[in-house]
Image (tube, rainbow over all chains, first blue to last red):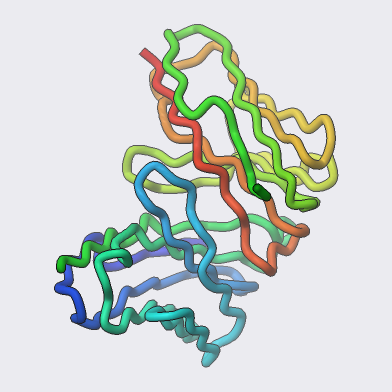
Length: 112
Length: 114
């Protein structure tokens, strides 16, 4: 069964303290891995899509990497405005190629 | 503003009632979705439509009936509401079935069944 596991469930950082979030996945043929950010009371906001092992993408203080079994979201010198829940999702190579399977997210709190 | 908009934002209703949630996107996307987020923040797909055609029906009780009058609208009607239906329901859209450029989510409808 296709599955996504994110760790840690929650992470508290001081402003400027870099860290990484993990997304481990089991999928019958990965078509794409997605990272989203979700603020309280809002819908998920798209960050990145990664398609193949070794691929990396960056956006401001965020950098996403992909291996055959997991993805990391590296946060460099975070600021309080980076506080949010970060969601990972995979898309499998099935007939229903538009189905995203989500993890339960990592709640990130960055303190000034 | 270009966006995915859903109404209402909050919905409180009694068990056994029937309710609808509406969703509209003005992004010109072909594919629309309904996702359910439970109290543990787990997002799970319910339905997807592509150009008004049902693509995914993810073993959702048949009390839930989606309707897509055109490719810019996807509504969700729920009959005989149960306590376990309480959750946040998100509408989303993507450019096409593959979703290469990501999904755009609405801000959610928090449904509380009492």
